[in-house]
Structure formats: C-alpha cells, structure tokens
Amino acid sequence: SSRPHSMSLMSQCGEEQVAGEYSKHYVTLKQIGKGAYGCVKMAYRRSDRLLAVAKFILKEKVGAQFWVDGPDGRKVPLELSLLMTLKHPNIVSVIDMYENDKYFQMVMEKHGAGMDLFEFIERRPRLDEPLLSYIFRQIGQAVEYLHSLNILHRDIKDENVIIDNKFHVKLIDFGSATFMSKDTLFSTFYGTTEYCSPEVLAGNKYAGPELEMWSMGITLYVLTFFVNPFSDIEDTIQGPLSFPQVVSDDLEHLLRWMLCKEPSQRCTVLQLMSHAWIRQPVNMSQYIFHEIVDCDRHEANPEMYFSGSLSPRSGSPVSLALDPLVKERSNPSEV
Ligand code: ADP
Ligand code: MG
Ligand code: MG
Image (tube, rainbow, N blue to C red; front, side, top):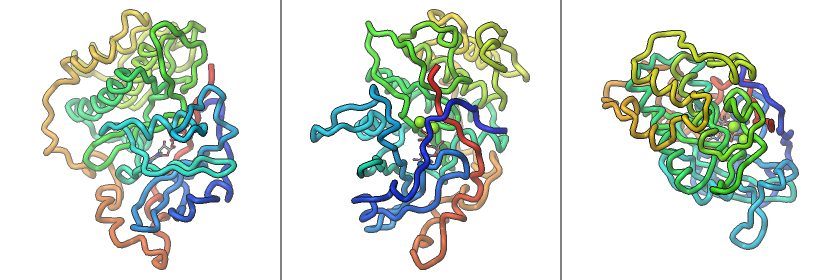
C-alpha cells in the first residue's frame, strides 16, 4: 500500500541543500526511504560521529504564514522555531540548525532505527490492546502538551510518528503546525485529506483542537485495524463508522467518541487522557520489539548495530541502515 496521496509541496533537493556552514559540522548520508520526500537524510556529526537526521527545508516552499522572528531578528520557519523551543519526551528534538541561501538545515535526534508508524503498521505488528494503548497514549501526551501551549500540529498521522525498539514514540513534522487563539477560526486545512475531519472537509471553519482529535482518532483506528475507516471524502462526511474486528468495549467507545462527526460532541484531549482505555495498566516487560514486529537486526537493536560502524573508511553504514525503508511518501495538502 502507499501512503495517502495529496497535493505535493515537495521540493527536489540537490547538492545545494548541504552547502554552507552545516557541512563543516555534518556529513550527509543517504536519504531516509526511497520515497518521494527527498529532503530528510541521515547525517553524522564530524566531531563525535553522532548519528542524526537532517531535514532540508527549501525556503521558497515555506508559506508566508509559516515564518516567525528568530532569536537574532532573522526570519525562521515556524516548524524549526517550534521544534527548537518544545521540550517533551514524545516530541522529536532539534540538535542544530543552519541555513544557506536556499535551505534551512534542521538536524534532529535520530530516534530508534528511523521507523515511523506507517512502516510499523505495514509490517502487521502483533499488538494487543494494552500495548496499543501504551503506544497511543504517548501521542496523546505530546498533543496534550502542545494544546496546553496553544499549538496545533495539524498533520497527525502514522507517518509523522516515529517509534523505537522500546515502543517509545515521538511526534515529528511540524510543517503544518500553528498557534491557535480562542477568537480565531482557521479556514484552510493543511494536513492530509484522509485524516481531515468531516466538518472541515465540508468547508467549515475550525478552531483546531477538535480537528486534531479527529486525526488522532483516524490514527488510532489505523493502528487498531490496519485499514482506514473511511474510503473517501464523501464517506468521511456521511458514512457510518464500522469495525472490521471485535475490540474491547472501552476501545470501541473511545474510537466512536474521537471519530464523532459532530465536533462539539467529540472527545477532547483531556477526556482522552482520562479515558479508561488509555489509563489501563500495561506490563511493558512482556513485549519484545522483534517478537511484535518483523524487523532486521539493526532495527531490533540500533544502538548495538551502529556502534563503531561509522568510520568514513568503512564503507556505507547507511545503505544497511536504510534497506528496510522502501515506502512512498505523501505531503499535506490544503483543502
Ligand atoms: P515531510 O514534511 O516531508 O513529511 P517529515 O518531517 O515528516 O517530512 O519526515 C519525513 C519522514 O522522514 C518521516 O515520515 C519519517 O519516516 C522520517 N523522519 C523524519 N524525522 C525523523 C527523525 N528525527 N528520526 C527518524 N526518522 C525521521
Ligand atoms: Mg511528514
Ligand atoms: Mg511536513
């Protein structure tokens, strides 16, 4: 299966992306995945060979409303400014930022082997509900933190969450994020159509949190059943929510609440975090990553795999590191 397709905001990144001060500090390795997004690559720091992930943001593709004043008065993309400021165990952190004429170079921590939840789901993990709850509550914690700071992510979906071999997940990709305020409604949707709520697809203005809860509901449904709940825009607006398999009453209740078509009745993030299904006990010591999801040695244990393998003379660690990532990617669209 391919990732949800939407209008591409993608840029072709060439040699120019690494030009400048950035390359004095980092060696850029292969692209993550073989998909369309050419602007996220593995990299390592020259000083200590720390393996990291570099995202190259083409300045001309950053929309006018996505710029903010940086610390020294220069303009920086909101995506970069937010990730530099935010500090949360379930949100990816930025290590360094550089810029040249055309690009911002955002260096992030590498979390796990670089597997996102799209890839994870495609491997048909053998998840039970307590483990699913453990994974999903971490996304909830990130969103609770963001909403408490009046920040909307607006592109929550499986491929914007990365997972490591301890089932620790982090939210990435703040390219559609924004600040919200009580008396401002948005009229443009910047996320991915498959994750967009019915009222926004129908053309209504939105405050924000209720849209975010819908996209989290889609994410939880996809993690539960490995299929999308709705086949198209019309189905999202009109169609009934059905369940391909039997799940617990608590999970069914939560999914129906998050995917409630009426935004004012929809579950809020605070209601989510206090829901019985989210708060259920989980004994994490019984779950072993490579028993839950089929993976290669380096994915099961990336720390061991990468140690000592990054000498510039010793061939290409990256081709080994990236072999399993073969997905097509998508970018958010404006609706
Ligand atoms: P885009 O805005 O083009 O969607 P993302 O920031 O979502 O770019 O990155 C694209 C993909 O790269 C993600 O779906 C994920 O698979 C991978 N990725 C991005 N950042 C990281 C990271 N810090 N660690 C591991 N993988 C990452
Ligand atoms: Mg993304
Ligand atoms: Mg993005």
